Amino acid sequence: MVSEQEKRLTRSCMEMALEAGAQKVRVTLSKSSMDLVATLDGEVDKVTACQDRNLEICIFADGRYGAFSTNRLEEAALRRFVGEAVQTTRMLAPDPCRDLPSPERQTKAALTGLELGLYDSAYEGVTAAERRQQALGASVWPASGKDWKLISEEGEYSDNLEHSYVLDSCGLEALHTETCFSYGVEVTIEDSRGRKYSGYWWDSCVFGKDLDGAAIGRKALEAAVAQRGSCSIPGGRRTLVLDSEISYKAVSPILAALGGFNLQQNNSFLQGSLGKKLFPEGMTLMDCPHRPGENGSRLFDSEGVATHERPIIENGVIKEYFLNTYMANKLGLAPTQEEATRPLLLPYGNAKNRDAILELCGEGILVTDFNGGNSNVATGDFSYGIEGFEFSGGRITRPVSGMLVTGNFLTLWGKLIAAGDDSRPCKGKLIPTLAFADVDFSGE
Image (cartoon, rainbow, N blue to C red; front, side, top):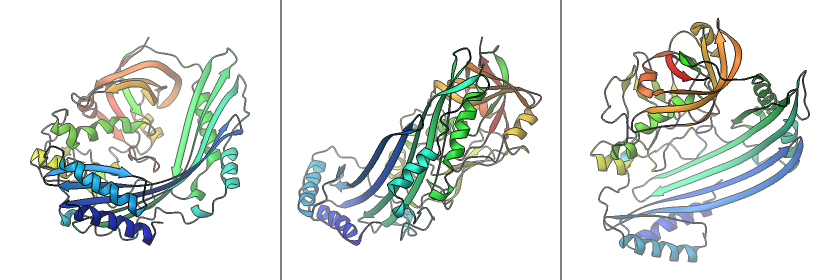
């Protein structure tokens, strides 16, 4: 936890900056610890343990702004650092758009850092032997099947604890504490003809007891085995189903285009979209930052601004830009928060999970991974390499790879067929399985 001594040091840093001539100050103390056990082919390959503690100070002095950080937290060194930071800030060009958020926008609820249930009290008691056991227990090495064998397995177990403590000269004081236990594994198999296929899976959770490493290893192996014999098939316009593991790729560009920086730079395909209906009736994307017990939930952003549950897109209408204080001032708009904290796409249509969506769509291509490609936040155009499965009659028929899916995000979302309710809680963006009609694929 953040100790009382660390709190006093953080407050002292703020007071030093004010004494040195800054008119406003924000100080953030960040602490983290992380332990990692990596395995290779069923044996421990690497063990890592690290701890970090640093202090960031944002200085507003004489109409100028500077941000500085240090990990030297002895009081004498900190006093020199703060004094030099204020002097440096005064040499910068004026920037009248820089300011602290108004006090009424700042959180008043983050008093202990434990309000959202993101701390596992058992974390402090986890031993090195238990971490090693967790990593090795998730291994599926060795493994083989009728016409394949496992030739490589790389796994990584980690657990970490993060604290942040934020103060500013307008009265903000906020705490956040979060534990995270995670495991990821990548496997490669070889079939009887020497062809190699890879699979990957991962999961993470707030509480260590909820992490099932063995299931993660099996899932990665199943993904590799299922890709045997994959090939490119004829292109054309087909139904696209995006697995919930990668469906965030269809939402991230929307959020980026609604961000203050891209809007201010005129580099957004959603420029001037606030209040406009650009998405299908019934499509609603919420920001749900206060989901208890889920990694990534937050009561406040990096400025200390209180987060709130609110619609980003409601029944197809753009309801929210993401504008921190600086970008809002530059654009002459009301500030919101700097980014979406926990975006959640609500169900659309009656099919609730991947199997039901495949059955609803009948035939098309289920995409389970993207292999390279890019999207353009200025135009909304995209092109991604894909791998996954062709399906017909609502059932998977064969694996596919070596194909491209291309289009424009506004056009794509205009052809939304369904969104399930099967988003993965471990993801930063809670996006379920999605289905779109008449999407361009290129193949053999």
